[in-house]
Amino acid sequence: MSSAALTPPEAARWAARAGLPLPDERHCAVAVTADHIHSVVAVLRELDFGDTPPAGAFRAEEEQRDAAV
Amino acid sequence: MQPYELSLAAAAREIRERRLSPVELVDSVLDRIEQVEPHVAAYVAVSAEQARRTAREAERDAARGSCRGPLHGIPVGLKDLIDVAGEPTTASSRTRAGHRAASDSTVVARLRAAGAILIGKTHTHEFAYGLTTPQTSNAWDQGRVAGGSSGGSAVAVATGAATFALGTDTGGSIRVPATLNGVVGLKPTYGLVPRHGVTSLSWSLDHVGPITRTVDDAALVLTAIAGHDPRDPASVAAPGADYRPRRDPDLTGVRVGVPRTYYFEHVDADVEAAVRRAVAQLEALGARLVEIDIPMARYVQATQWGLMVPEATAYHESTLRTVPELYQADVRILLEAGELMGAGDYLRAQRARTLMRDAWARVLKDVDVIAAPAVPMGAVPSGRETVTWPDGTVESVSDAYVRLSSPANITGVPALSVPVGHDAAGMPIGMQVLGRPFAERTLLLVGHAYERTQPARSLAPSPENAGTR
Image (tube, rainbow over all chains, first blue to last red; front, side):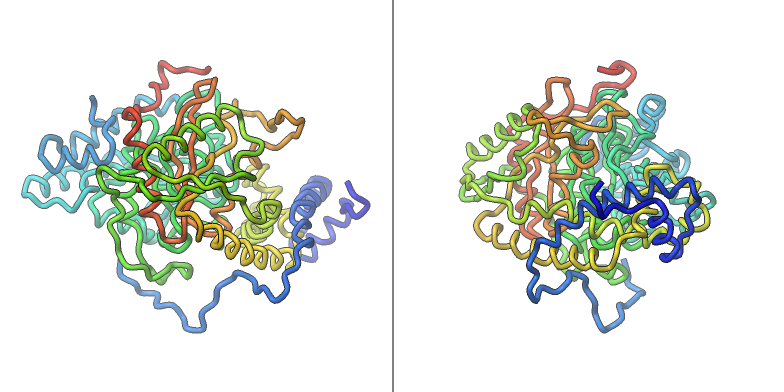
């Protein structure tokens, strides 16, 4: 683990702030898995995005919900 | 040859010419299910009586000369994330106990309209969040993984327990099990096949598509299920098309990109050899091979996880708080840890996706398709967690199975997996053909042209005889 690794109490606190109270016995495993996920996605910080927008799509007009098959 | 052994196209021909009735076909497939199911456990539920009833109606229609098309009377297995009105969509999860779908998903409504007969719901890795489908056994070796997450669908098609099936693909979940069980899988372009009524793993990466015995069959299914439905916000208003390739396709002038980077790295030697042989076959059919480099390869896994992890956690927000103990351990921990990912990481993944889509579009200006391995290695023994590559690198089995599939989920480009041989253990190997958005016809042409050079593919060896290798 890097020096920035989450401790189990930190993982529990972050999860609680996200609205997910974790039982004590989950703190350690969640911290380890969250750290692993973080190590994978942190690579994206190397990229220079410039003005690149996110890929999410949004249309101002609501879709017609009664489409025929 | 028994009816359950027929490809979709062959069965359709027999039904159209009145040499086979839908009742005979459905009975044959139901008998086959009884025979293989104790060994492979592909199905969550089989709707035998309903299927027989629908088959009798299809038979009456056929006798009157009223055939709805090539899917008329053909039995289909549906991954159990796909809603069928009045039936539970279990997602192979205990959290879905008591679920009952209010209406048909778009793809089911379209399959019914095309005359297909719903024969059962097939197992998925729980909520599609995994690559092995542990409830189900590989069609070729019951001691090995089925692949996932559409493992039940692929095993059903490979064993003759369904003439074709539908799966979903968020990071390879159609192509991985199709490859590991020696059948064809197609992940269509993002937005081509509507996902309305299909349980989501990750909204921005999910696709629905066919798993079939042949490329020709995949084209027939795609023709029935593709097309706009505004109830899926990603659905694209593309005109209807007949995707079936010409009978004797000519690949003269088709430019096939062969990756110098990424797709042949950390790949089993048998897989590389089989795929390169298949690529040479494409060249012999007239294609021109062009070496290419895969852009932004270093960021594939980070982008896939950056999109999928928070989206999956968001989908399960409510049940993760009310019944967390009902999830399988591997899925629960990913959903919980996903709560800790920040918006910054998610937005970086979305912006990386924009860059990657644009970079892939530039590569696909110079070639018509890309041909590469579908999966780095064949089906591993059940329970194996990691693979060690010759340079000493250790990779989790799930990461390895996703690695070559996820670029098509991130960029949205179509990707077809086609069986091209077997490894030293006798496990199937697949080639992946990727192309420009909405260029499914080109992919299917290339896949079909290759398939025509090979002997007709047989079903997996009968499980009651195959045992474990």
